[in-house]
Amino acid sequence: MFGSETDRKNDRYGWIDAAAPELLRASRELVENNEACRVSDQAVAQILTAAIRLYVAKSDGEERTFPPIAGERDSEMTPTELLSAVSEMLRALHLGPMELALWYRRRPDEDSYGAGEKP
Image (cartoon, rainbow, N blue to C red; front, top):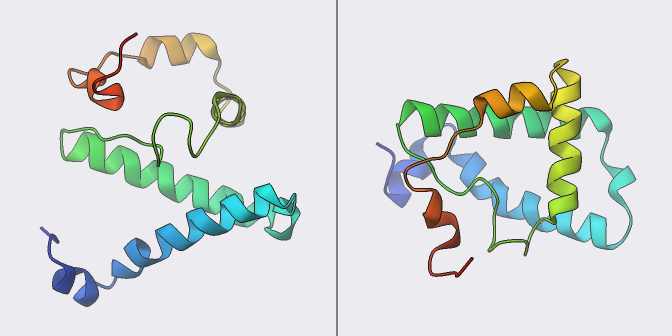
């Protein structure tokens, strides 16, 4: 629907595509410099909420999936970072590992996240 670069520039939400790489770069820099405290808790929660909402809307609404984490494997995020965030998100909604296990499902294109890699 909004495939071309011209479409994105004329879209009132096109700024999100332009801001995303800068946000990723800034987060990487803040963490590397041990300065994550410079971003408020509220801002982090709003960014995370927006990202989750958009991911679910795109994957479920468009009946497709795509890698939810930037980069290859753990180039942008460690397993510890991911699991810490998931644990806190579950806790925030009063959910636990059992609910996660009930919702977890294998996707038909699950192998695409690690394409070409041997287990």
